[in-house]
Image (cartoon, rainbow, N blue to C red; front, side, top):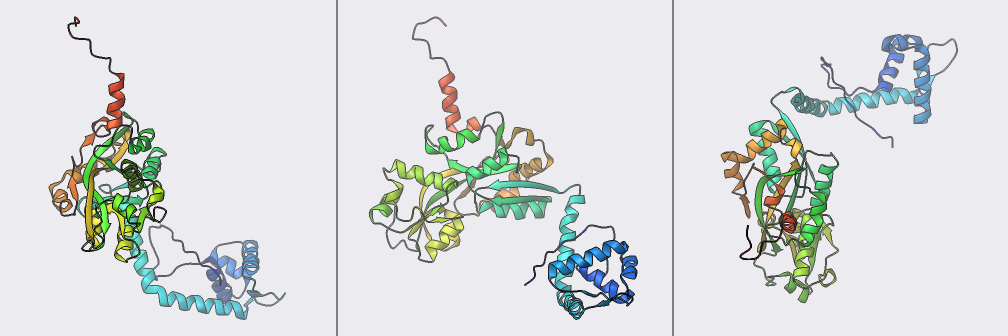
Length: 376
């Protein structure tokens, strides 16, 4: 079966017919209507030699003859070329309404590029249930369009540092120890003075379990002891970092958790695994659990951070996002999401204010206090 690729072009005017143009089909139609290669070349505005070469190349690619090549005779289409023309026109007729809808959608979307008040902001982020809501709210109320790519927290910050996005979303415990796995994971990726945090939210993470919690799951230790089925997140995800940290604090190893190597790409996917009965528990957000009708065992509160380079703070799109985040209508909608609380929403915050390992480094640099009685 031959493969089809679609393309489009921008122009000041467009044809009234909803057609997807194809150079081969247009060339064959020109040969049919003009009765010669030279006439077809004039009709499409190309040289005879170019049209001849194109037809020969198409014959090679398709493995079929397209033109009856007889010297001194008018050019004619082969039976295969006639059938190709007919089937293409049939497909165009059947797809015309869908093509028109697609064309209109493209025109509406591309019009944003020519709208001076519209902004587009690229965001790589750890999966979060609040971000799609923010995406819809910002687009409908402020002409701010968030181009969100969900990935792990580590990958999101790396994308920011490599210039692949303007903003990154990651999450970390509210009070991680300075030498914690969280600190060791994120400290090499973030630098005070270079990166700035934009206040977003705190959210509750915990264990998603079946409705009614029939297995009486209350901790990771219980899951490990009873050899219950766990479902995990992929390496690089912030929740995976959190899980490994919680396991270490509980004196557990990954091998003690049945299903530690079973990975899902999002909180929603973990919730679905529990809801379907293929897993007994998984670590995730309260919002994801409630959305699937699951019970939820809270374990901790964490910050979900938005981070950008300091130089990006003055960009109109970033300023527009900060305005949206601080707006009362957004805060009212946001507070309806289970387990979420706005946290300095839209405010610029230095790394040292929220990430304790930077405070820890600063403390090491301070000179020791003089002993009592020493003149100051």
